[in-house]
Image 1 (cartoon, rainbow, N blue to C red):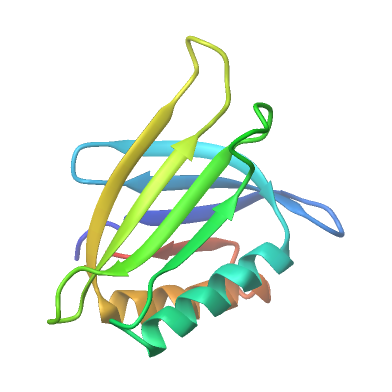
Image 2: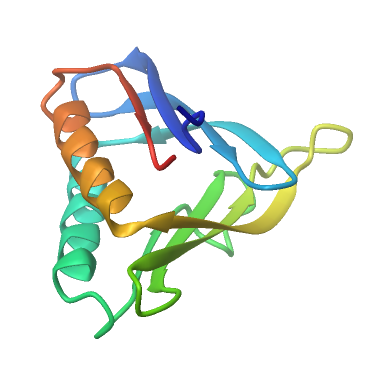
Length: 140
């Protein structure tokens, strides 16, 4: 079975938010980045991806955490879109860890997956939100 291309692990939690280690794997690159999230942000991602998958081909969905103008917080953008009519879904990742050189990293890359992997991502994300799991591995 192929390795997951999306992996998120809670590494520190507080009552309102938590720190996650995100690992993204594309065809020619791997990105590892730590940043802070809360359940409201993850629920926004889950709901948006659910609506996208339900109306496949009629829309696309972009989820952003961080602000392009804020140079201190890590930036992540995920855009889900229909790649072809056979159910192949593309995900565009835009990431910037906002660190100083030599640790600075900025990347844009794409992952192609099948719609069933998007459905699995939604299920795994729900388990992550309700704390059934502390490591989310999905999108193969």
